[in-house]
Length: 148
Ligand SMILES: [Zn+2]
Image (tube, rainbow, N blue to C red; front, side):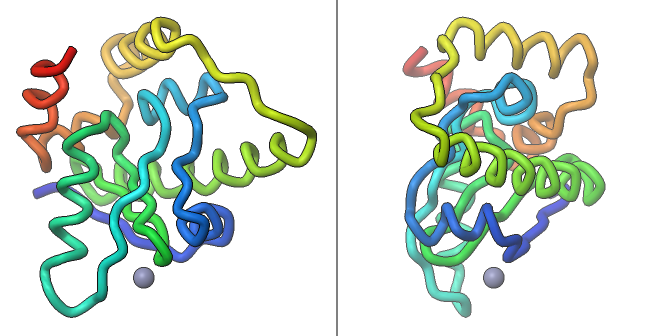
């Protein structure tokens, strides 16, 4: 397994408190997260339900980040550095999308454009953290292909 990072960073945790996924309304989100940042289930620390909730949620997403409901963000990566980078990016977009919401309704990005941005960034630049997510989470790719 690669790196996993957990924080209680203010803005990402605020979204987790509301149990609302962060919509993909910025190209940097398409690049890094390949879509919205999903919300995982409520889970109590102390058994394996957090880990299972993270893995299950990320299996249905390209995002290396998940907002665990009422708790906060967890990010994964091929190594610790990639997971930290995803956590930093997550807090940045959580803050920016929150600010955008104060001004009105953010505009969604067409899913085909999200795909193109994600593929270009992950494959051409090869610096994405989603590789790590796939490594942690092999079935994610299969699940996505199954309903693509
Ligand atoms: Zn925590």
